[in-house]
Amino acid sequence: MQQTLLMIEDDGRLAGMVVDYLTHAGFAVAHAERAADGLAWLAAHRADLVILDLMLPDGNGLDLCRTIRAGSDLPVLMLTARGDPTDRIVGLELGADDYLPKPFEPRELLARIRAVLRRRGGPGSERAGAVLRFGQLEIDRDARRLRIDGQTCDLTDHQFALVNAMAERAGRVLSREQLMDLVSGEPLDAFDRSIDVHIARIRAVIENDPKRPLRILTVRGAGYVFSRVQDA
Figure (cartoon, one colour):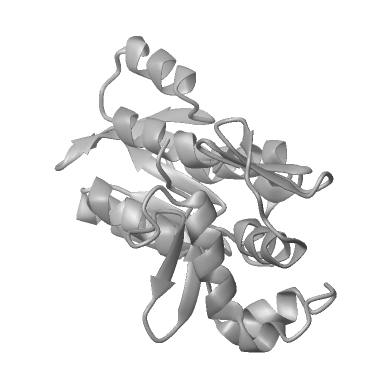
């Protein structure tokens, strides 16, 4: 399965070189120039690793790393033109998996990416455990329980099966047909006629404001996406 990388870097020339190099190495690579664009991309797509520049035009890479880490265990490799070891220490303390100073050789970047992915167990490793965590939200798949800030939410088996299927594929837009296929092994009578109803009921339980959801987002004309980046 092809692994997907997101590079958040405002230097267009550097980003173009890296994207080309990593694409030839077999990765699917997306690029965002700003922190806000990177977060929006992560909310709508699946990634296996983020390459994150420390200095961005609309924010600090350390703050962005903190935001990403609050919502998921997505691997983060930080880049910086600054040689201050304090930056490296702070970045790693915030949850970055590795740290590479500029300028760098593309081969070293590739080696570090592969090393991080190996340590994380490859594609989908962040979802390999029995418990999925997204900020304050925790999904215990063995116990079939969803908790927010330690409090168990009252979900039916139908609703748990649906939210679990979406959370396992956080960041991916899933159509109603795909959701039906994903839960086809569950005892969900007439599920195909009530996807939207179940989503509404789940939102009523897990969202602070169901009319302005942060966890399960609607993608007009496409379906739904379980957001990686959520309220911490």
